[in-house]
Amino acid sequence: MAENTWKRSSLPREPAELGKPLVDPALWYPKDILANEDWIYRLSDSEIAEVKSAVAVVEERGLDIKDITKEDFPLPTLGPRLQEVQDELMEGRGLVLIKGLPIDDFNRAQYAAAFWGISVYVGRALSQNRQGHVLGHVKDIGGDYSKTRGYKTKAHMAFHCDQADVLALGCIHDAKAGGEHLVCSAVALYNEMIKRRPDLAVELGWKFYRQLSTEKHPGQKDPFIRQGIFNFHDGYFAVRGVSSALNKGQSIPGVPQFTEAQKEALQMFRDIAPEIAIEVPLGRGDISYVMNHVTLHSRTDFEDWPEPERKRHLLRLWMNTGDRRPLPPEIHKFSQGIYDETTKFVAPLDAE
Image (cartoon, rainbow, N blue to C red; front, side):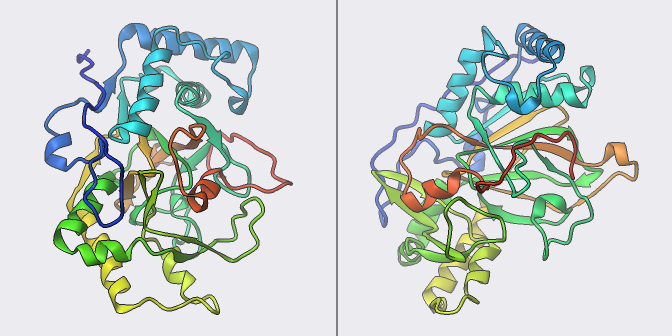
């Protein structure tokens, strides 16, 4: 078994301010992060044994996955290390990959329990859609990306961030070809724009109109929300993606049209993200954690296996870390999951 070389980032942070370069532990470029495996956590045999033991207890008790808490999933040695993982996500690089979970030793329900049980030490799961799914599935079910959310399709997805502090992905099967999990540092992206075109970086501090999908958020009346792409609050930086919701926002009556400078800035953001991204080597059983306020993630389009049981399939969690990091109110409000007063939370074991 490969040695675990994971360690916390030691880079400094200075108060963040729009228009000035960021000094932040989440500032990394591909050459830096790929130079070593400090960001990859490899489970030891004893940690794997703890996970298997905890899964067995969950099975014995007949617990629904959504009801598993830390108390139900004791990890005496791995648990404290997972607290360090949360620290690294929220205050460090914003990216951790956990490798070594022996997925072939688990059935679907057991792997889902392991994924959830490990993740419960990192954050609290949120509802990801109006069906109340707290355990999500990234799987092509024949969806058309122009009509549905990307996780139900095999389409390429541009760089974006999800409506949660942390995104977790657990790999059940990868694709026959493609489907790479790409991540870039939004801090590096911002600094690149400051270096190349500071005027355009500042344009992305404006609060853009973003159309809300039919997915409900608590107490939301307007058909849009307003958020900057580059946001600053209490000396902390937070990014939002340049997604189709911005373009859809342009069709809402009364919303001002993009200026030429805004169009140029948005395009520059789209151009730089893939230049500075890495491919995260997410293999079967692995768990990827990315922090949405300092990273952006993307996926390439993919070709699936013909056999249904081999289709590309990732488990997904959106997680809240209990206000570990200062966020502007308009981002905090939309990092709490998708639900309304009628939502019943469920953890299905397959895509629906």
